[in-house]
Image 1: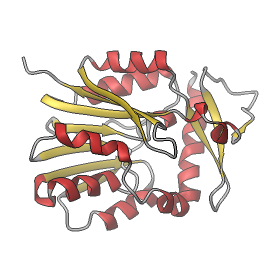
Image 2: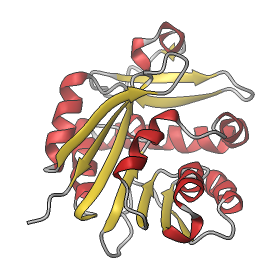
Image 3: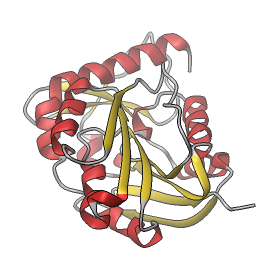
Length: 236
């Protein structure tokens, strides 16, 4: 995918979250059921990097289940509006939040983490090469015996999401699985979403160089809207 297309799609999504931050936050108030499967694999005390943290609900989920004093949380997101909501939700917790554009800025420096999480983000990363590079980079942030957890939104498998597809501009490059979807809750807006098929998913897991210890589907009305992988960095 060329740089012009990447830049345009990135701007489309930044504008999407600026417009829909309120309604998006209201629709994302509860933890995803798929997160429950992570809990048995987590240590009693946890340092976590939440990439694309949105309104901070995964950090709140961890604090509620592990105990606020046991979680050291770093969340990054490109939306100032959602980060403002995250600061309110995580007030009083050991949390650090940063505004970063994954396509234009490096991940934060710091010691490796017990858990690196990437939920609800992959479909917004334009370009196969960029998605592979992101997973490799995240894997390097995991400490020995630590975990990388990520999910892929399988929206294209459901008619209700395919009905929201709008035409792709003729003058912009697209890769297989690239779509523009409209938003029908409150404000109207367009977002870029990529469908990660099975072949690409396997390539993403392989790119991390980590050991997959769990793979499953969860969430949504049907209980299988997201595909998850939990990967461990083995100790030498």
